Image (cartoon, rainbow, N blue to C red; front, side, top):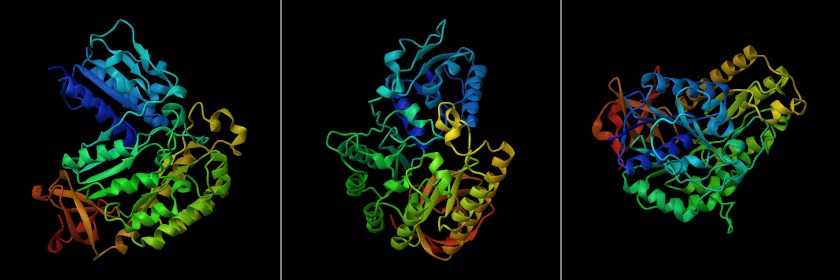
Length: 442
């Protein structure tokens, strides 16, 4: 059998799409092997959110070529869509596929014999109209289900609309059918993912809403858990929050991008809300679900963020009752307004050392919030879904409100949801399960 390996960088949506590409190979009787093992074909799905992500993509391409010079190297993903010529210039790359082409890989590749010249198949992203259903199910207990792709927003720091195209989604019926297949395959939890999932359905001739989607998914038989991966604050409505609060399926956990807690910076970023809207969304969640997990994304060192604005943002985030942060250091992305029209960002370039300092401060704040939230749940019983991953004699799982829990490894508990009394914090940031308090739920 011809062997193929895969490597994915970036978001959960990328992982879901890699899984879809992998299934295309499996249906044609290719043997899937781990990346780094001897392979006849290597597929690398790239990310372009930061310079670091791009550098890692180039590193993994060179590693694939170094490990086996005759391997047929296919590069796709957001980096491939935006700057295919950079990737095509790397020695050993055989094919570069754009955002639409990756779902029709076999239509562009007649054979996997190395060509004399790199083939580039990248169409204009403005013409993107295919959805490309996908789901990532590598964890055996949790699957990431793609419900939406692309973005109609124009944030001044972001290249994703140019890499992914306009917002588009499949029908509610098709999404529910995928969810049923995942449940039938044994998955206990489904995480809804996309680029801007709150825009779900707005591209259809008969528009649907994200709220209608989660209502439909709530009725999927035997689906134990569902989560919303990330949703913009201006698209997180009162009815969505109230519905999640009453649902037995959707978990009390929200991830809401913030990016900055300063209104001037938010304006320069071209975000579609100001901080009072964000604070209101968090307060509404807390009103309905006092113990909900709430995460947010924050960018450190955006050009408009002078010291005073950073301090203003830091104070705002410090006072927010969120439970963790995902912190990103601002990275100049060619083709964005922040780079091409710097006068419109309202500020000058923040030195890299200062960006790193702010990033460290925000990451420290995140740890404090994570610990405070875990301590607030100590001695309480919360349902935990145990994962397949075992390491150093331990197994891990997440509570309904997204606290990472650790216990002694027990393969029989894999995929099981148990009511677990939460104990002390461990050195690795997890919470220790009280072994004397396991009450099987399913």
